[in-house]
Image 1 (tube, rainbow, N blue to C red):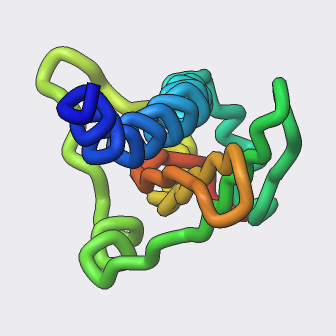
Image 2: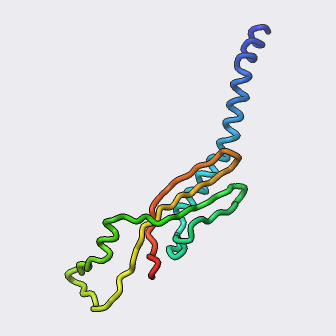
Image 3: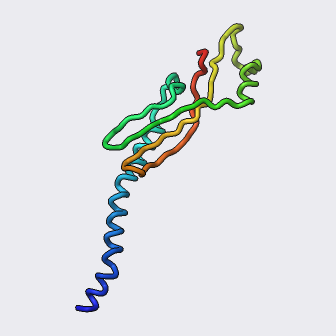
Length: 129
């Protein structure tokens, strides 16, 4: 009996700690699934310039922040004439879309201080489109 009590007293705290970790894993998995859903969903490219969107779904708080990325190479190529494909001729005066890269940061939180986040790039139309 003494050996059993010693065994339980040594393992007891570790078992309770493992249970707390297992309880938190459910929230983390749900948050990661939500984060993947946010990043994989189609993006309305016209609203990328609006900045931050946030909300709550199934007890998970989420936010998506977008900001334009301006690169010197992008600005230089925007003014350069485009080389048309050999089999396609571009009509004179045809306007090409003005694409801008946007840096997106998505964050999902399931408890105070518990969050997952990811960042990616998306293309959106420029302001003059």
